[in-house]
Image (cartoon, rainbow, N blue to C red; front, side):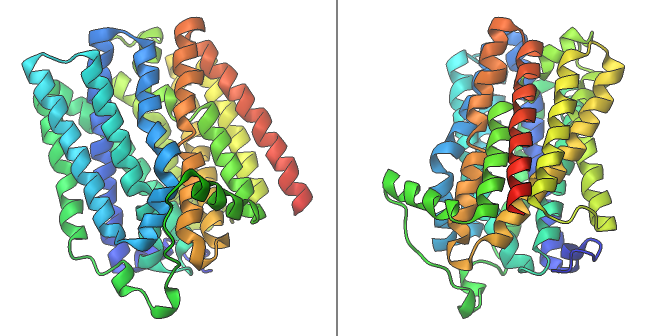
Length: 409
């Protein structure tokens, strides 16, 4: 694999287009979170609802990631991604209508958050399968890392764009404008020359459907036979279970405690700080060819991430919160992209979709419970204490996995 070539995946014209359009779609996703979370916080002031936002968003990944991964092998992944984008557009439009009519209730918010989560699981595993179709095995590490960078680029721009829309247009019109950001990706996918019809005959994969819980259990059993995939899946699951992105849903509360009580640049900066660190990580690691994928390296980076998140939870200084979130973003992208690369490289072609599905079930689905560890517990003991305790548990688990990976090495 030519991981030493700077930005190797960008040598593929199709990937350059995919990179820009997926970043735009992720920006739309981030803008929606910025606007909807702010309105929900201002209207209901409920940490528990913020926790539910995390649970409802990620529970579909826990339940449906494996079937989605298998369907990505059986069906055209482009069409699955398009369906996800259409659902994202529908959710943004529904938020806008509810904001305009001033009829938003808690059950409305819960329903839209669930639909948003379903849209994510529909396009998540297929997007990873499509990466392999676009760049092949040789430049897969570069594609995975740049794909994570594109995601963070969208997340970084999302708070800035979301803040601008809040200030310039207000939440009602701003979130309706946001719905249009998904259209370019939908249009490009209509004719992009990738997917099952364009794969070489030798790259055909098994087309066995997942029809029951037993089939899901067998898929997990297959993954357990591959040590690297198992270790990285457990690492991703631990990170999602303990912390995930639950602190993002609680960011209005953290901003309030740090003395930022109004929609302005300082609030957007908190949301964008870890995305900026992740963006820098993607470009630095790609340009320098640093951090070759190794299980133990991924575990050590996850330990640093836990320390940075724990520090953010405990400090009361806005000036210190920003650099801690920046460091957290840098190492989070590093270990997540590395883990995902190792899973795809170690997975045989005939089970790639299932391997990605199981990995996503842990990496994304376990974030369901981070809504409990950070959000629901936060309603009882405070969001600072709950996030700090979750980070401490993550540090210990990552350390244990690092020891295990060292012994296996």
